[in-house]
Image (tube, rainbow, N blue to C red; front, side, top):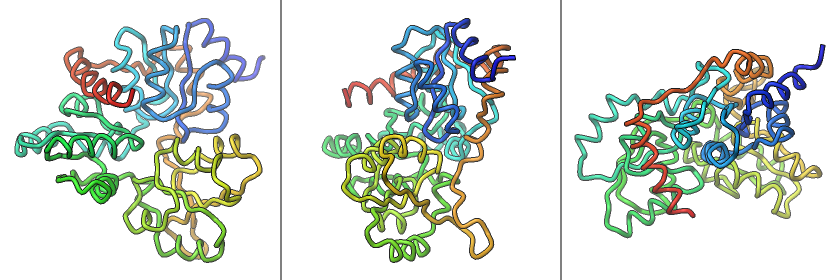
Length: 316
């Protein structure tokens, strides 16, 4: 019996499929994606890679909204996710009916939503942004005199607002992982490692962001470990990112930023439970059965694609 990775490789080939994986899934899935000609990246880059490659099926190791984003950019392709129950608290925090009503109540504002949202929410938006592009887009809109309605992440929205001074109305969603980072414990850890650079994802609370040496998207944080002179980094984001960081900077020391918990409790267990639902087993079964296909209404798909295309054109 061949190993599970060999079986997955054979199924990918037989199905003319490509595996795209997010930085937060297991190291073995990330490795497999790269070994088979796929990619490990953030959600938008995963979707863009799927759109531009020759594969007719895109297999997404990540969470549901990432599968939807891939489908939005490639409506003609088959898009499979490894587990349809793997979701995201930001997506769940922003149901389309409530959000649409909120937008209608503030019709004078330009609607800017983060990539971590459903296809319906993206379709309702004027712009879709990533954590790496949010500052640039909001700055651009502010220069045009636009007032902004921002969703769903209040911490990222707050960070963007503080950096741009734009007029922003914030939806009150948050990421269940980044919400847990504790500023007082992080300050304490910094004292123990004075030479370390603190890397923080802007979905974290403001008090945590304030302690950062670098605030940035997953890709920006990986690049910081690779490019900066420091040898030690305290990392405040999902610990799935350590695999790629260690790959690009094998000699450097990475320390997990503290989350909740004291003493005998788990002091740092920053890993998304939904990302952890992606396994080699369900990758193989998804490929064999073609289950877990993402389907999106064509009208919704087109509107969402328009919102994302604005970003792609703007950042091109």
